[in-house]
Amino acid sequence: MDPLTHSLFGLVLGQTGLRRVTKSWAWIAVVASNAPDLDSVFEPFGDLRHLVWHRHFTHSLVFVPLVAVASVAIVKYILRRDVE
Image (cartoon, rainbow, N blue to C red; front, side):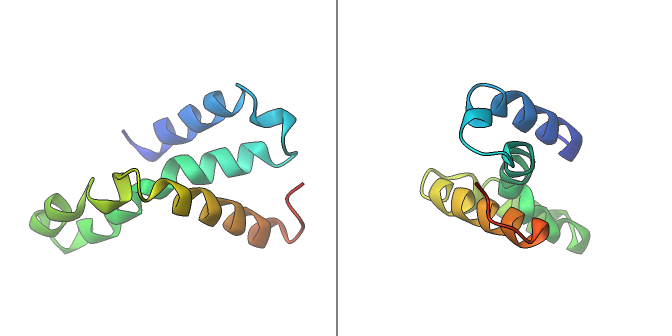
């Protein structure tokens, strides 16, 4: 999926209940849904590196808590306020 599809999926998934938890739910959902594909930074260097690393550790269940914490931290940093 492309980043637009990831972002829309995050927004739709956030509608299921994240709205009741925080006011910044939309930002967190968009960042969190795009975070596992940060391995795409290897794509400009050639197809081989991208194929080796895409859907590797960033798409694992072990990485999910790290993505969640990092997404909230990124949104908190960008918005320059507490995520309530």
